[in-house]
Image (tube, rainbow, N blue to C red; front, top):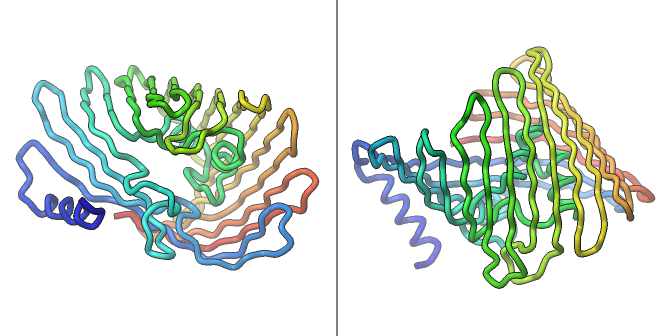
Length: 326
């Protein structure tokens, strides 16, 4: 079955009458921006239209069936989208459902179990405790953890099993494993999260030995502590991560601090982060911006970033863009 046939079949399912105790939902987000950027050390800047600077554009389908006794069956199918060129995936190498593809069981009493391709607990914690969320374009936290060669492994793991506990007075825990399947080893992660009132925090441990592709990756290990406190007039964020590349024997210390200030119909956002490696160039990143909401589903943003690697000229990026959720 090709990709177009599969997508058409899912859309057809959405048009069928839903059973009284089951549902299928289509959803997604499109993010497109225009701007100018220069990478650290580069001699010239590039003007471009980009997809996913603030949130990687995606589309998805999810379903829930009530099995009785408080137990539900679930599924998620989610793919990435490059809206600037009308192509699927974050790049040409992405699989069709690269964001998520899983089935599971969920219970308020026993928690949730999902099997397939799942978003990692490290990625969820990273986006949850910085003011720029899951922005690969502008979040110092996301860039330092996932695109600076500090940690291997994608933001989603294939061949995985993810268990999340019910909430106990604001506390939840999770255990996550991705089977090795002859690709160099398995991935494992453990996490704990607290969220109640204005205070929230998390602690995540992750070890990666495979990346789901055919090319071997370095073995890496990371522990990250995160926290936030919402004072009303300002919400503060902080993160500290200790990462180790076990293959190359390099250690990284990662520090992040940010703030979100409600202003008019939007929020003023700011964050500073740095990476201190045991060998190699240190990195410091500043980002400031304003996110203005036209509605609950649509926002406009303007962002500026300064990104500096030791010994190289600073990189700079400026973008204005729009996100729409459906």
